[in-house]
Length: 271
Image 1 (cartoon, rainbow, N blue to C red):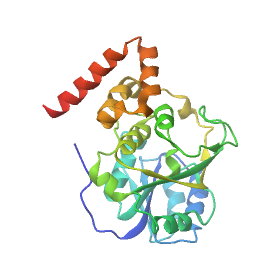
Image 2 (cartoon, rainbow, N blue to C red; image 1 turned 30 degrees about the horizontal axis):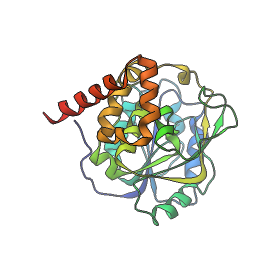
Image 3 (cartoon, rainbow, N blue to C red; image 1 turned 120 degrees about the vertical axis):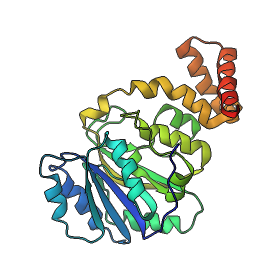
Image 4 (cartoon, rainbow, N blue to C red; image 1 turned 90 degrees about the vertical axis):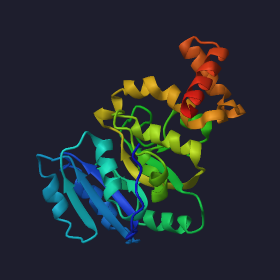
C-alpha cells in the first residue's frame, strides 16, 4: 500500500490536469484556470508524452504557478497519482484537459466554503456538454449524493475538491481500473468521510467523449467486494438494504450468502 507522505504546503489549491494529445482543448481549459479571481494555486500538467502540440500550448502560458511534466504513464489515473505525489497544495482538484471551470469565481467560492468547514471533501455540480451515457447534453449533474446514490453512480470527479490529508490516509487511485478508478476512490472516501455539497456549478464537463462508453470490467468484478471492504459493518445499516437486495437479484444469491461473503471479507482483513 502506498500512501502520500506529508509535504510542505506551498499553495492553497493544486490543480492537476492529465493530458495526452490535448492540443484541441487545452488552451480553453487553461484559460478557465488562469482567469480565476482567486490566485493562490499551482497547476500541474501531467502529460503522457503527447505527440501533437499539447506541450507547446501549455508553454504559451508563461506563469510561474504552472509546472509541466511529460513522461510515459499507464493512463489517466496513473498520471493523476503522479500529480498527487508532486503536488504542494492544501487542497487537490483534478480537471480534464477538455473541461473548463464554469466561471472565474469557482476557486474563490470553494476557498470561502473551506474556511468555514472542517469537512475534507467538497463537491458541487457539473454542466454536461454532449451526451456522457450517464447524463445528457445540458444536464446539471447531479446534486446531493447520499449512500444509496453513490453506490449506483459516481459523483462527477471534476466537481470534487480533496484536502491533501485524504491522500495521506487512503491509497491513491487503483490503476487496474481504467475507467472507474475515481468511482472506486470516492466509494472508499464515502466510507471514511462526510462529504460537503455546495449547490454551485463547478465545471463544464465534456461528456461527448468515446471513452465514457467504455466498460470497466475489472471494476465491475471487484465492486461488491470493495464495497464490503470499505464499509465494513456499516453494511448492516438500513441505508444498505437496497444495495444488498440489488446484489441478491443480480447474483441470484440469498441474503445469507451475501452476509457470509461480507463476514469472510471482514475476517480476512483481521487475520
